[in-house]
Length: 182
Image: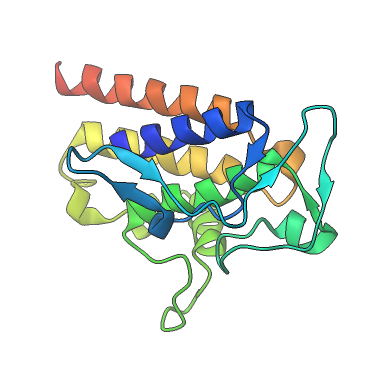
């Protein structure tokens, strides 16, 4: 949870500074010597003035993480980072890669959307996390999956802001602590 929360916090900071990262992915989330998150690779970042709704620019980023709305319409918004972060959340709870050509459903975002819609969380969440043996883990990972589902919505207007994502992650973490201590 800490990696997700710290990454979301970094993205909230960037968005408040009118910057869109544009290549949020697990390879760009580094850990320092104290296992604190450092978001890296700002080579494709764009300034996003707060007085505009979007920036028209050709899509850039990594396959599997690129916002489909941005890819289709060439309109970059802060919700493009939200989509990419949704993929990262799914990677964290599933231990699957964003794109895996050996997997039947090679796009993790689409696989996740399908499993979450079917409430087939046990087919998405990595069971080695304790999903079937620890009620707190089951609750937290299911809530993270549902949050990721909101981030992965095709239509950007349906996605939460990064600030909303951060607040929800903190709430999920608190829920987990409460369940573990009862």
